[in-house]
Length: 160
Image 1 (tube, helix red, strand yellow):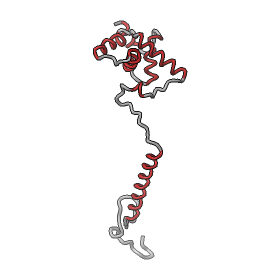
Image 2: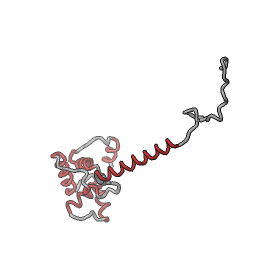
Image 3: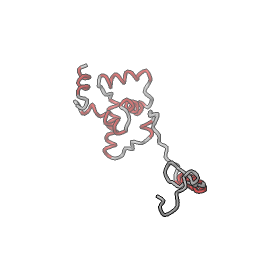
Image 4: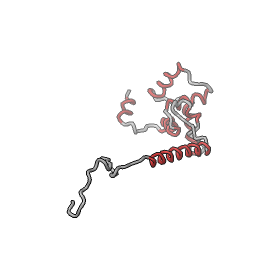
């Protein structure tokens, strides 16, 4: 309980750098710490983390602050790979538990050209239709009065 209060009082304080390895690896992959534990479990045991073990793993790591050996090993591997430049953090295998992680990219030059052509055609059509509209207004800004609505100006040398 005292550790929890100390953490709440000073969350930026790190007592043991070895305890932060999972958080560091999770930040590298841009995933949550618990998701990193799921990835580590799968990497170590070659199976998904069982549903009945979720609470136990959460309690061990988040409440008691103990890092399982398989999670520490996985996190160290990720940190070493990142330091050597051999880690692709956008690899979909690291984000398979993310429901909103999207790796779709445009289908290349052909799709880009097709979309660009459609946009140019729509804009050209809109300008052409707009230029065909007959306008008899004398003002560019509202209110738009046409020639019939404006009073005739007096003509002559003293007209003001």
